[in-house]
Image 1 (cartoon, rainbow over the protein chains, first blue to last red):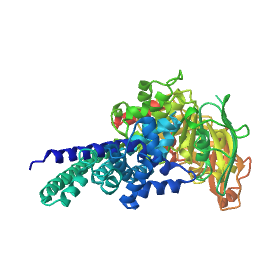
Image 2 (cartoon, chains in turn orange, red):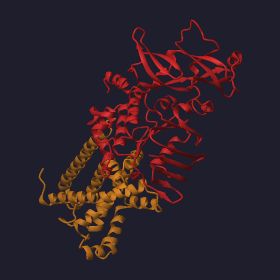
Image 3 (tube, one colour):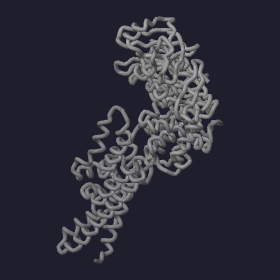
Image 4 (cartoon, rainbow over the protein chains, first blue to last red):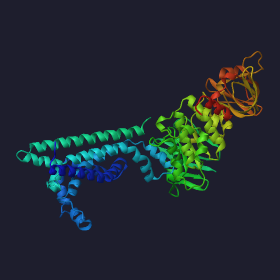
Length: 230
Length: 377
């Protein structure tokens, strides 16, 4: 099975978009998961709802909201473009943003669950041993939630690899710039004789998903074994 | 070093209202479950913020609600040994031990790793993870971890409660050694008379959130009025004794105390060693005349000093044996049949085999050797 250069481009672009989306979401994901799991503040349920929103909304709606907010003339998009030179519309960065937003609920949910499973009595113990809250987080909480963080990252990555609706709405379907794997497959299905190409990319999609799943299983198993050889 | 506690706190319907001061040695916070012991040390450690009160260590104020002071737990330098160990599962034993020391690196003092490791006999465990340790090993590592954080005071919350008798016997000598060798005062929470009788220098007896009595251990243990607040079945006097000689033929050891001589079997302590003997009230019989042809080896002359409340069928009696107190538990029927009143001369009889061996304290070396023999030192 040989892939055309255009197909290779789509695969590479998809990988880049998914990796960037996952890695950049991670710190925010941990922060928000921590706030949701441990915080007691006004508007907590609102924040929770907001984070979960992309999971429930039609992806087209999410993409359209992104277009309004982060488009070249959107309030946030204009600000970022003018002051930091960061442009999202019709760029691969926009695809990464859309994928990040779509994967975010999955990331936060997995991390939040693992934070809630952490024995807070261990954190108390660390406190009595002289660690302030930041150190407690770095030396106790974080190492203990590694399996959950990995699981969340894999979910987010997988979601990003498969994201279609929000991406195509927000940044369109430009070969070499915003045409990710799903968009490429979609394009193939829209032209006569594109079945073979669509099928090839579908196989690639399945392989990448399987590999990611395997990798996450391995990492999670390793992390868990390290933690409870009780 | 003085720890002064004066706090009021409410937990649901439970009211905690205690004042006490302690110096060096091992202070036992002793009382039934639910008497507020753990709440007190949680307040000292900064895990709980009291509604009212003041806790100080010498000139350092840990809490003062009147002045709105609350020192965060990580700055208190209070070593806390939890009931369940609470070792960090993702770190090795060595990393666990050094965890607190890393944060205490600015302070000058603090034990060094080797000394603590030897004191607690955990040299062989350093590279293991907590998941692979036995309950007794975990608790020893937890004690070491707290010690290495250079604490001003060591808090121990029923550190033996989750262990079986064999493991308790394994750890007790280490706690005694700690009490005798380190300068750090220890606050030890327990509801076990045997542990308190063996370990405590001073007892703070708690009942329903209040301090019922404070004093040296033998003094508290002989007070009949306090029996109802502790574990009446296990209650008894604490006698300080010295090992006099060993009788190899019968495997008996003779001990000398102010109350008289005691014979005990199979005690592996060197001559001259001082130890505490806990004589449970239920194991003491009384006789008006010196009995002859008796199997019990310990016969101690004394005088009835005090008779406890006798509204029930059971009565506790304190006997003064040349200045040392013994407690006997008799039926009220026996007390009346023998005509026992304050001042009656009696003989106290104790079977050697009845003496509580679990609470024997003192000769560390002998006990440590025994632990080593079982291959677990």
